[in-house]
View (cartoon, helix red, strand yellow):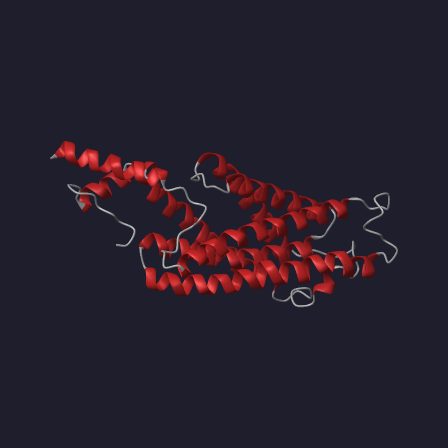
Length: 272
C-alpha cells in the first residue's frame, strides 16, 4: 500500500474507480510510479534479452573480438532482434519525453542522452559496429534496473530498504558508467580498434578516412560527459543523506506535488 495515499474524505473504492477512469494520469505521484514501473520492467527484460543474445558470442567477455575481421562480421538473428528492440525503445523514450514524462531539472540532458543514443545505434548499425554497441546497451540497461528500482522503493516510502538499494545502485553505477564504459569501451574504440582494423588510422588527422568513426567517438565521449554530470547529481543526493536528510531525486521538482496536494485538500473540504 506504499503507493496509495488516500486524502481525507477519499475511500479506497473511490480511488480505485477514479484510477479506472484514468484520473491517475493527472496526479504527479501516480505518473511517477507508472513512468518508473514500465521502465523498470523493460530494463529487466532488455538485460535478459541481451544476455540471451550475447551469452554465446565471442565478444561479450573479450572486447577485442568486436574489431577482429571487421567489417565482415556476421550478425545472427538473436543479436539483430536485440538491437532492433533497443532502437524501438529509445524512439519510444523520445516520444514519451515530449508527451507523458514529468519534466525534471535535467530535461534537456535526458533529451540529449536519448538523441545521442539513437544516433549511436543507427551509426553503429550502418557501419557494422553492432558488437561494441551491444556491450554498451547491456551495461547501461543493467545499471538502469537499479535506478528505477530505487525510485519505486522511494515512492513506496520504504526508507530502510531504500538505503540498501541506493548503496547497490551507486556501486553498480560506478562500476558500469565510470569504470567499464570509459576504460573498456571507449579505450577499446580509441586504441584497440585502429590496431586491429587499420594501424595507420590517426584519430587526430581529420582528413584520414573513414570519418564516421570519429563522429561515433565524439558521441561516446558525449555520453561520458552526461555520466559525469549525473554522477555529480548523485553525489549531491549522497551528501544530503549523510547530512541527515531523506534520499530524494535531485532532478525532481516538487512544485507539482505541492499543487496536487493542495488540490486534494480543497476537494476534501468541499465534500465536507
